[in-house]
Length: 609
Image (tube, rainbow, N blue to C red; front, side, top):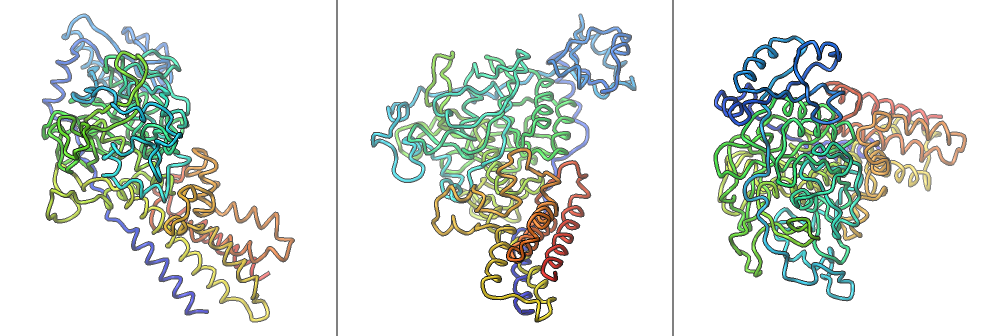
């Protein structure tokens, strides 16, 4: 028995070792360069964005003598306002006074933000009728997915799809798309949406009047395997549309700051920012920090100037900055580069047809046509198209149970693939053009689900075997009871995580039996289950024991469940993959480890009684 326990412990340690990561170097911090601040002032010399302390009163605001123009209806809550002045000198003088005001948190010029050049350059709709009509009559592609125009989506295959779909599809995850809005085009009909907001018109109508946001949302979660059109990466995830850009693709950094906070406050797991500009704005940086503290992963496009200066907000700390590749895996002519780049993903190049399929090598998705006259299947190119590939992969990883932002980023970086044009590389980073390499969905989800499953099961089994070792001979059980104990332990720790890799249907990966009990409940509860401290605790086995302990025949199952849940909690503590809500980050591991200890004690108590 002791030899088996040692073997199980070794199995758990091997899984944790496979999960080990060296951390991710944060983006350089510190104040923005003086030339950037000067450029921001020149871009919007008469208008300031003032972020007052949240506890400032209406009377105190009025006493300052400025006309505080709300950014949206949320300005009354977060006390962020736009203030206009007749001349640049008036604005500069006011900025100096406001920065010395103890009731003011930040003062910035209202820097404009827009879509990057090239992003909105779309080819005509695909000249293939199977993309625009239901193909169930026999024109659909064979196998999974059966979307007839998936064959044109070289970009999804470059990141490791459809292999990754065998292990997860993003069920239960919410991705906020902060962009021009999102319209329910035909190939998003099967995609789940959650309520968002329109920060341009200050209302709840989040339809797209440009096309960019819908295209971005399609890459993340286009309805897939529906015998129509094209596919998306995390097609079982939900989209939260947040409109911050106008029909012309322009907007305000202040609105973006409020949209980021909205997403964090409304249970988004991931935020995609396929927009930006050259100017730093303090409220955006603070909003990103706020979202990060709440366990939200933020992904942003690096920019399309083809320069060595990454755009904001991708340049900020706590953001996964994404560069763009084309079909041959080189970075594109337009992609920005620099030390802040974390990873690369397909952005496309519509000027070439390197794969010889007769179509431009852009990123293909279903979106609205320019001018809003219906919808079509359009190719776009840009780092704006690269960022949602990474956001989609992050959704697959979160759906596999890895929720802590640092753990998600580290996993994406550690599993990134060395691109074909690079023959050799030292260390994790390849260069300032690719960051760690090209995002690899299959490798990321395999590590998130497979290695985690092995480690959780190994740790749970080791704890269970040690519990069995402590029994007196007359207390031991055998036969069917052992199998019941083992089955409950597996379901509690890892579920049947190995079935998809053995050829089982892909839907099993996101089903309750395809992962551990805690992750299963998180999937069923959706955003309410992600990092829920009541769920990520000993409460579940305690409730099961309290309800069912009277049935002696169920005690082996109750003990097995307790040890299995303990294994899952212990893995989350050791690998630091879970962000427990309402628990300070520095106490997450202690919370998980303490509850693993309590679950182990509960399992031992059930066995001994």
